[in-house]
Structure formats: structure tokens, C-alpha cells
Length: 283
Length: 298
Image (cartoon, rainbow over all chains, first blue to last red; front, side, top):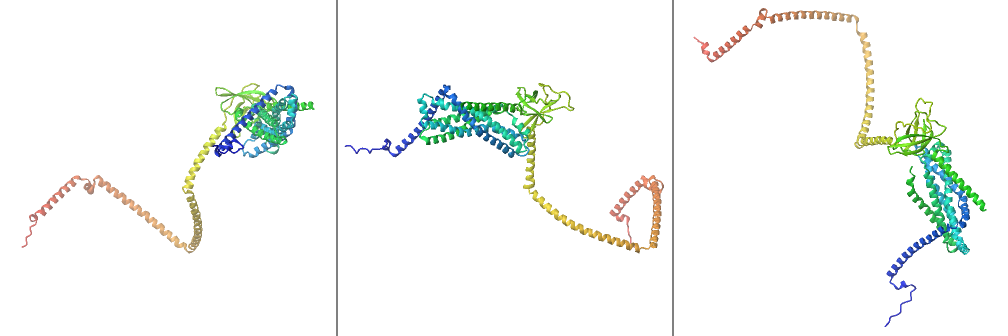
């Protein structure tokens, strides 16, 4: 004697009791999350592998690198200089007005140099370029992806990574330090003029503080941070554009995600750099 | 288009490299000119850093070029002096605190009078006596602060908590009231004294009017006579005194009857013997009255 046939369930788990079904769904979700994480790591590893392989094709990326250096570096000079000038001036003013009476005024030059060269010059340049350069990078590559231009490059036997990613990576890695040098110089000049013109700090006081305890490693530290920020901007934003899907909406989503991830990455790198290299800054 | 990109990128990188090199040199060496080196040596713990200013008689003439740590407790310090300045021979170098944050400068102290010769590049400037650093000053300030704190605590306990302040307030209030009362008393006394002086002045005026000069002259004559009589009396007393002293001298020397009476010990013995015999006689009379008193009537 056989019973009635089981009802036709849409999924196999629906045949289980509720408790078992919930547990199975829970563990399945966790497993999918981990699989997704490992898949992302794997995809990025492939991406890095392709970048490294792309370095072997200089004929493809060198001409494009110059163009990207102009886009990333030269075109960003006005924005970088304006931001650095205002930051330098504000630092000098704030430092002067927060000092209590009796403090040597040369501390303003020292504080301006330390804040601009060690921290705010690279960091603000990195964050500003994340929005201006990184967003543009993701949008460009993402658009090429959704309009199948990247597929066309592959069809023409072009290495898309060597043509699109490597030039941007090289350009960002070298142009960020260049911009940071200009930002540091502009910030210090702005701090000098604001201090001397708008406050009671003398030029001698400011210059004395500016040179106090200076070590060349401070400049190296600033440039190292800038290089790391440039690499982070190029890698994250290029990758997010490279994996863009779902048309124009996907491009917008990728661009927003790229800017957010790059900003957080820049801040994390800044903290890590300070934690690792700051002890070597003591003179 | 491509050529233009290359040019602009090249210009940007060149400018950045020039700014980097010149800026770093300027910050590290105090200017694009290196100046000439002088050397000195300080004990450990001077808080010296590259780039700190070098002062000659209070004027910035260079910067600390390099600081090398030695293992024997000293620091070899290279000073970069601007070419336009010379350091007088015999100057000494000290580390001088600047400000309150522990910053220091190297101060070159020229001798007085300033000699005509100067140190040559590469010479060593001898270190001078160390000035009190900010740590010592702060320690001193800390000690003073602790003393003040203890003092304030004691004052707090003695003056405020123990009620001395209230008592002091009460005392001050009482003193103020007392002062007011004293002022009243003094004013009253002042008036009394003024009145007394006026009365005295009136009395003196009346007396001068009332006293007769003839009576006064007679009184003065009587007083003079009394004084003369007193002088005579004193002279007589003196004479009597001398006579008595002479008599006493004679008596002490055993002259005369009185002298013999006073100085003759035999007489004294006889008197004692007689008194004893009289005592025994009286005792015998008391014991045997019939032996001596025999009353017969009829």
C-alpha cells in the first residue's frame, strides 16, 4: 500500500521541516559569502597577473602612458594647487590663533611644515584625485566594457590590460608624487604668506620653525605615501571599471563604488604608513 | 596633440623635481649656500637636532648641520655658518633653551673685548658652561609649585577649614566697632581736656589776680627762716651723733664704768654665780619657808 505522492516543491529544501530549512539557508548564505570573497580575491589576483603580464608589452602602454600622465598630472595641477594653498593658509591661521601667549611663534612654521609635508599634502591630494581622476578612470573603462570596446580590443589581438590599465597605473604612480611636491610647496608658501601678512608672525620666525628639525626622510615619506595613493587609485578604479556590468547604470554604480573604496583605501594606507614609517621620522 | 602632451608632462615633472631638490636643500641646509663648517662638542642630552639655529650674540648666523652621537658621552656637532658672518676667536658655544617646548639653539658667546681674529672654517669652538635647560627650569618650577601647593593646603586647613577666617572676620568686625567706640571716647576726652585746660587757664588767671605779693614775700621769708632752723637742727643732731659715737667707742674699749661693765667678764661670772645662788636660795625658801620665816605673834 503506497501513500499519496509528495507535493511538487519548487526547491528541494522545501521538503524539510522549517527549522532544518532555515539552518540550511543560513549556512548556504555564509558559504556563498565566503565563496564570493574568495572569488573576488581570485579575480583580483588574475587582474594583477594580467597587469604584470601587460608590463611586458611596452609598445602598447608607453604611448598611452604619456597621455594618461597628462590627464592625471597636468590637468590636475590647478585643483591640487588651489586645495593646497587654502589648506596651508588655514593651517597657519588656525595654528597662530590657537597658540597661547608666551609660545615661540616659530612653532607655526614647524607645525605648518609637519602637517602639510607629512600628512595633509599627500592625503588631500590623494582624496581630491580619487574623485577627479579615479572616478573618470572607472567611468572610462566601465563604458568601454559595457559598449564592448574591450572585447573589440581583444578581438584585434590587443591586450586590454596593457593598453588600458598599465598606463593608468604608471601614470598615477608617478604623477601623484609630482602633484604632492607641488602641493607641499604651494601649501608652505601659502602658510608663509598668510602668517607673515595676516598675523604677527615674522618671516624669520616662520622660516626658523620651517627648518627646525627637518630631515630629508620627511620628504621621502611624503612621496612614498603619494606613490602608494596613486597606485591604490589606479588599481581600484581601473578594476572597478574593468568588471563593470549592466549598462549605464552599472557604470554609475561602479564609479560610485570605486570612489568610496578608493577613499577608504587611501585613508587606511595613510594610517598604515604612519604606523609603520612614523618612528623613522624622529630626528 | 601627442607631442604637446609629452611637453606638458615633461615641464610638470621638471618643475616638480626642481622644487623638490631646491626645497629640500633649502630646508635641510638653511639655504642654497652651504656656508662654512665649525665644530663643537657637547655632552649628551642636549636635545640637538639638525636645522636648529646658531646664534652669535643673539643673531642667527647659521644652523646645526649635523649631530653625531659618540659613545663616550659626547655629541660631535657641526655648525654651518653663513659666509657673511665670522665668529670671533675665543668664542664659546653653549646650548641655549628657546621657548617653553624644550627647543634649543646653539649660542656662540664672543669674548669681551672682541678680538680681531676669527675662527677659520673647520675650527672647533670650545663649549662654554652649560645653561639651565628647560628640564631643570621645569623641575624648579615644579618644586616651587609643590611648595605653593603645600602652603595652600595648610592655609586651607588652618584658615578656612579650622574657622580661622570666620574668626578673623569676627575680629575685624569687633575691631571696627571698637575703633568706632574709641573714636567716640577720644572725641569725648578731647572735649573734656579742652574744657579742663580752659578751666585751668581761668583758674590760673584768677590766682594771679588774687594772690598778694606782700603776703607771698612774707611767706617766702618764713620759709627761709624755717629752712635755716632746720639746718641748725641738723647741725645739732650731727654734733650729738658724734658725741654718742665717742661714748660708744669708749665703752667698746673698756674705758670708764660703762666700758668696764661691758667688757669685764669676771663681773659677768660673779653675776651668774650670784643669780644661781639666789635661785637656789629662793628654791630653798619655797621648800622650807619656816626655816627662814618665823612669824611669831605675841
